[in-house]
Structures are given as C-alpha cells and as structure tokens.
Image (cartoon, rainbow, N blue to C red):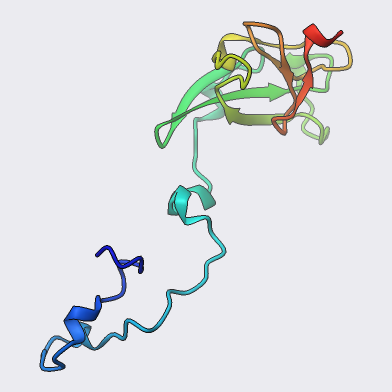
Amino acid sequence: SGNGRSPFFMNDAALSDGTSNDPLSQISTAAEPPNTNRDESKGPWTDNWFPIAFEEFLFRDKPTRHNLLGSPIVVWFHDEDDDIDNYDNSNDESSWKVMLDICPHRLAPLSEGRILKDGPRKGCIECPYHGWAFDGSGDCVHIPQLQ
C-alpha cells in the first residue's frame, strides 16, 4: 500500500468515511504489527528449519552442492574421527555442516573444493581457488597467502 505498514493492516483510506459494512474495514491502522524480532528484509523464511537432503544421498568424503530457497549452499561432513567409514555417533565433534556455497574471497563455489583430512584444520572445507579453509561455523580458519 506504500504507507510503510504491514500488508495485514488496512490503509487509512478504507476507514475515512466509516460507512463500510466490511468487518475488515474496522481494523485500526493506528495499531503497529506485532514485534517478531525478525529481520524483515530477509523475509519470513530465514527463521525456520528446512530439510536439505536425505543423508543417504550425501557424501561424507566430499562437499555436496544444493539449493535452498534459491540460495546455493554446500553440505559437508566435518569429521573428527580417523575412520570416515566407521563413524561413531557418540563423538559430538563430528557432524554435518552447511554454509553458503560461495568463498568470500573470489566467489568460487566451495562445493568444488575438498574436505581437509588431517592436520589442525581436519574436517574444514577448502576453497578450490586459493585454498582458503572454513570451519563448520563458517569462519575462515586459514589463508595460505598470509603464511
């Protein structure tokens, strides 16, 4: 309606004469929409959980690209165990990780990279372009050019 209000609320013109028989016309525009503590610029979909893929269709040894609501994402298994084929569910450090499938350095798809198998960054995903490595929370933990 162009007045900056939520589409749920009627505009001021609908209440100007007060003669409408429509019960919706009685909604006051002075009321503010409820505060949901949500960043409305991202839409209502960002505060929800969505299934991405069945685990049987994911790979524990390489990243997998998927699309979620039009955004490219990468899914990989951040493994702290030595034997990826004999995964032990009791280890809380090993789990599936998801982040945007874009390296912030040169926008290369992280899904074309690899999962680091050993060393201090084991289980991190590495960008195929310049080797930047990201941990399961999406933090950049290694930039080879800085060493």
